[in-house]
Length: 366
Image (tube, rainbow, N blue to C red):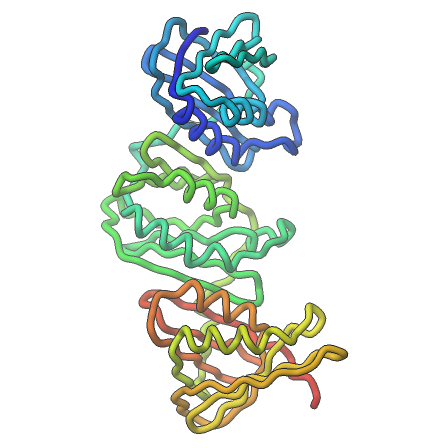
């Protein structure tokens, strides 16, 4: 195999692919990328058996086609450290000689036949979504996933497609985020898989300048195609909670704020909290809310913020981080905090077609 490529273009591709493969892969072969060269260019493949990527790269010249496994981290380092514009590959007996300017490297590869088969994108079962819509759905929900992989369904995002609407929903059991959008469902797709966090992050990483993305949902995987890349993500197992059942059934109080003012006030009050006492107390009056926090051996805080209060007075406590994250992921001038009780979920409203729900914490005495 012999070919030449633009160094930066190849480096960009390898860096994207390396986000799927990695040095801590369970099987050593998964620490490699598969480099397949044909007369029209190169295809880079990588997988960790949960997420897989197929990335197409243009080459400046192909003298001989071929196929090899190369360690992705080493290859990325070589391309990153070289300064020349063009890099040349010559592969013989599973050893690649890489030349870039005055630097030359010999990298031992492996048998490509040992690499797992990566599924091809099924165009016949795919539907289209606007790129910006798809990107927004991910951005508004991914942050609310559980961080622990042991949470199974909570470690992914539910991707619901039904009728003329698409939505993503994420929860870690303490807060829930849902974003929806309309789209043209010509194939009448009706699916609701749970997509792994890593899969969503990789989907987001491949979104280029194309105005639309192609999506294919199968029984055990979700596949996305954009520009020169195709990504497949395994579907998570487990039962995802029905987000509509979490919506507050009653309303005891509604307080309306300027979003940035509420964000600032919560961050101020959170300064004097600790990991052990990560909560702030909210008390409502006619035209303001008072936020207080207290941490043993550290001190306490009191922050006032103007708002419009409707309903009966109530005192409730929250982990400030959860509300702050929700507010950061909204685009709106004003927000409403809808509270149904001191021990029931609260609703943060503001951005159109976005639902954010936060569970309160138990009020401490004093």
